Length: 144
Image (cartoon, rainbow, N blue to C red; front, side, top):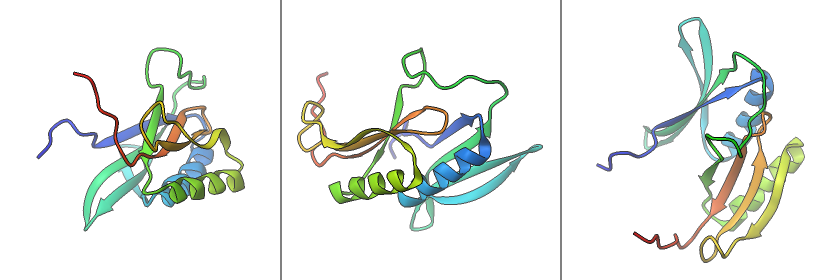
């Protein structure tokens, strides 16, 4: 078994209701199932991806304790990329984002400087966190 893979991602959000609606639409499109988990006095909204009944990965939303939007150019997280199964899958999410009124940063396009066939849409969540949905048929070779 590979050690070091990402198990879950917790996101701190300013407006839990707005973020829940956004992530329900976006992650639901990607195949995540919404569940709730009580954690002390806090109800967390969790979205999990499963395969044959096994949880593969989850995303949780937690309320922020103080204000301020996300700045991907400050130290910390720049963006999160989710894997798409095809270019049509990317295009489908793009349409959902437009219908939802989400902040699309870059419409679907090829980015051959990342990898051959790299096709992605870039968008922001309600707090400004940059997200990506990418189809990459040929992963890039990494220099070691």
